[in-house]
Amino acid sequence: MAAGPPPPLEPSPLPTFTEEGFADKFLRKTRENPLVPLGCLCTISVLVYGIICFKKGNTRRSQLMMRARVIAQGCTFAALLGGMAATAFKSR
Image 1 (cartoon, rainbow, N blue to C red):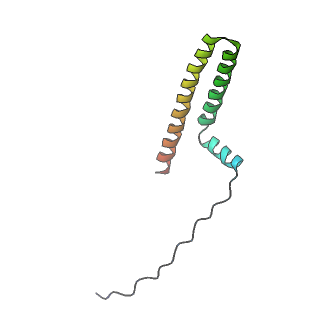
Image 2: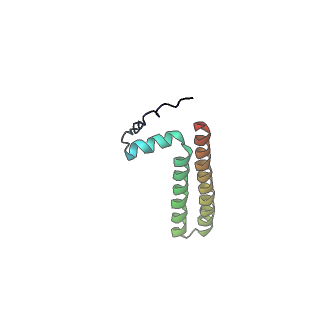
Image 3: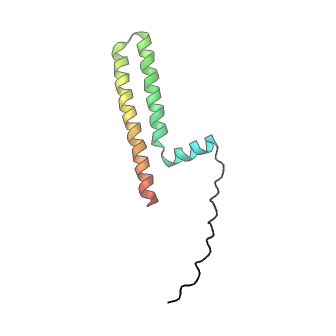
């Protein structure tokens, strides 16, 4: 069995990526997983309303809003993990 010379090593060309601005990337990521930005907006709105209630002296409502904020953050985190898992399974 005669072994010939090894084939020449030619490096594969590097992949080229198009420049993607912040707005383009934000829109693409929002289309991929729309629940994360929605959860962020919900969390921020509940937080702001809770702070307003706190400043007005409505402590009962303020405590309720802070608990709702924690729940909204948990839902946002779950949406983030779900989106990551869906992307990982889709790439397989």
